[in-house]
Structure formats: C-alpha cells, structure tokens
Amino acid sequence: MKHLFFSQIFCRDAVLSYSAPSNVERQLKLIYGGTAIVGLLNLLLLACCGFVALPLFYLVHVSYFTFAAKVACLCNFVKVYCYGVAVIILQAALTAHFLGDDCAIQLYLLCMLLVAHYIFVTSYRRTVKVLFLTLSSIVIVSAYLIIDEFLDFWIKPHQLISDLTEIFFTLINAAGALTLFTFACSVFVSSFQHEFRRLNDLNTGLNEAVVHDKLTGLLNRTGLERKLSWLRQHKLIGGDKPYTVVMGDIDFFKTVNDSYGHDAGDLVLQRISVYLNGYVNEHFYLCRWGGEEFLIVILSKLESAVAVVEELRSQIEEMVIPFYNKELKVTMSFGLCGSQDEEKFTEMVRLADGELYRAKRSGRNRVSYTTLEDQSSPSGT
Image (cartoon, rainbow, N blue to C red; front, side, top):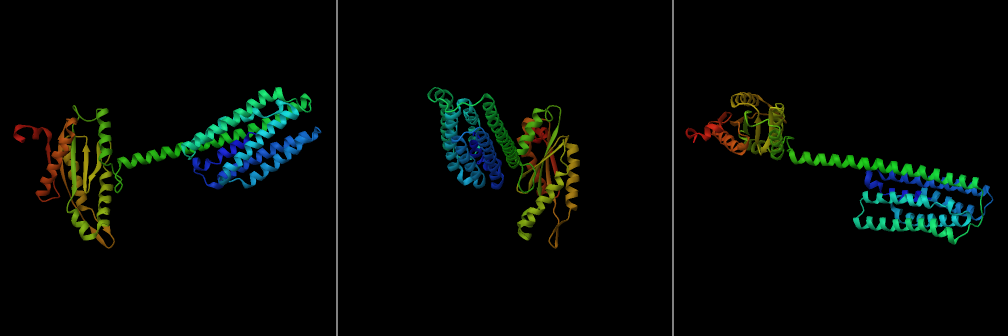
C-alpha cells in the first residue's frame, strides 16, 4: 500500500524533529505494522472469497511488512524503500489483473506524491533531495498511469467479484491507507512545528548574541544603536525632548586585573553591570561600550541626569565585592553631555568621553559634565 513511502520519507524525521533515533524508529515500526495489518485484512477477505493467488501474495506482503516493522531503523532507508516500491507496484498490478483496476491501489500511490516532498525538509544535500523526489515522482505517476489507464485495456480481470465484495475490499484499503496517511501527516506537522520553533529560538538566540555583551549580559554598541533608532522612530529623543549621554569608566581597573587576575576583573564588571542594570527603564538605557567603559543614555535634562549619576557613583563607591577571601572595592568616574539634538549623538559621545577623562585627571571617582550647546557656543570653544 502507499504507506511504505511514508515510512521511508519519515525515517529522516530524526534530522527534522531532532528527536532521538529510537523515537523515529518507533514511528517507522508503527507505519510498517499498520501496513501489515491492512495487508492482513486484505488477505482474510480474499481467502474468504475463495481466491488463491492473491492471498498467497498478501501472505508475502504481510510477512514483509511485519519483518520491516521489526528491523525498521535509519540505516536501511534506501534498501527498504526500494523493496517497498517494488512491492507496491507488484501488488497493484496483481490486484488489477485478478480483480480489476477498481480494486487496485493506484489512488493511494498518487497520494504519496505529496508525502515525497517531505524529503525537502531533511538534512540531505540538495542534489539528493531533488534526485529522490524526481525518481519517486516518476515511479508513482508511472504506476498510477499504467494501472489506471493502460491496464484497464490490456488486462482483463482473471476473476470477477461481486459489487459488495469490491466495495468491502476498497473500504478496507481506503480506511487503512487514510489512517496511516493521517498518522504520517500528523508526524510531519508536529516535526515541522518543532523545527519552526527550534529555528525561531535559534534566530532569537543569534539576535540576542548580536546585541548583547556575552560577559555582562548588557546591550553592546549594536544593541544600543538599535535601541536609539527605535527611540528616534517613536520621537522619544530630540526635538523638545532632551537627553543626556553618560560615559562611565571603572577607576584603576587594570590594577584589579594585575593584582587579582582577570577572574576578579570579570567579577567586578559583572557586579557593576548588575547594579547599573537595576536602573534601566524607559528613561535609562545602558550598554557596555568596551573594556571597563559603560555608556548610558538618560532621557532627561542634564541636571536630572547628573543627580542620578552622582547617586550611581556614591553607591558604587560603597560596594563590597567578595572575591574568595578578599573584599574588592572599586570606584567609577563619569562624563556627561546633555542636548536635545538626536542627530549629534556621536558628537555627544565624544564630548562625554572628554568629560570622563577630565574627571579622571581631576582625581577619579568624580562626575564631570557639559552640554552640546555650551561646547558649540563661542565661549565653549
């Protein structure tokens, strides 16, 4: 019956659904076993009707698929597939010869053309996929045309059966075929959804990796640029909405690394990042600018931003960071630049960086600030 195609196609479902091989093989066993059961029903029906040749063939058919259900695994994909195609074609030809084409299974073969496309969502190379689909399509369509069109003229049924037997025979095959077809499609849909979710999660993870710093989990420069772009699109900065750029740097960070090792330096960065990240909200945006530098965008006037940064500076000064049997204490210096011109962001970063170095030269653990307008005025140049 048509179900064999399902089993071979779906044996590659291990790659698509990323399930364990045992799960895939269990699916194969169910499909093969179901095919054997449908064949057994045909066998019993034909035996009851007094036929001889077809019941013998179906006995081979049932034996083959019972054996296939026991040995189903990923490694015998091609072999069992080819044997199964031969069994399907032979079964259809014999059924048409003995009972007439109305009792053959060419329709179920044609249905398999849809499932054959499943090969495209496996991990095979494109050449293998195209070749597989082409060959299987040729076999399926050819079998359908030969059995449905030509054998009807070339072969006269060896034995006529009653209309009731023909209907019963057809219903058994149709019910079994549709049942396995539904099962195979459910596996496909489930696997496709699983793969879609996996790719979506992977894509989300990659996006997170692109915009976040690996060590601290904060936004990186790319992430902050995207956030600023979003703020500009929603007109949350610029125009009559002032904002302040803050550049912060950990004082004597190199000394921490040299004295206690890079593990201590990483710990300091992480602890300060956690603290600063606690301030993040719709008015406070933070990123790790590079090394021990942090860049903050605060959507407020410079005076309000200075008060916030002063609080940050004093709280960081009081922080104690346990490191093994030691207690690390660090401070930070900050440079600020305020403005309302969102197009001058790069210039504001440069000026905030300049103010940061002014705070460093003034003794560190300080806040220094300016505005873009002051720097642009004649008195500020």
